[in-house]
Length: 108
Image 1 (cartoon, rainbow, N blue to C red):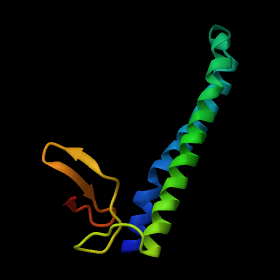
Image 2 (image 1 turned 180 degrees about the vertical axis):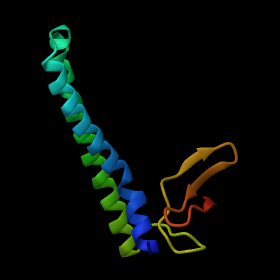
Image 3 (image 1 turned 60 degrees about the vertical axis):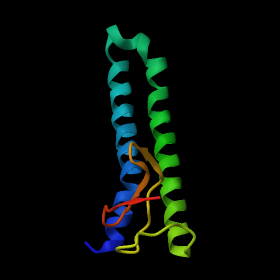
Image 4 (image 1 turned 120 degrees about the vertical axis):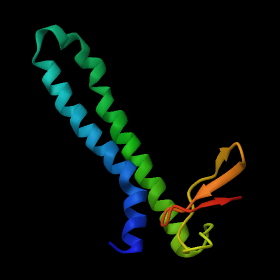
């Protein structure tokens, strides 16, 4: 796996997991509908796959936008490898960012 593939994998993994969660919730909702004791929960549970699909869509859109900005040169890059930096995190030692390619931590 080359560096660019690793960057894309780390960027799109949350969207893929949310999509897998949506599929599992769809299966669970159909299973709950066939059980008499849980049939009353089905109208509420049917919204859960939609929320997971929305999370997958937003996460995938954000990953695409960040990758596009990095390829165009509009995002901060890692000093060690040139990979894109993640969003700013607030820590005890001040704000920091993690490289999406090599995992190095950079203070901002």
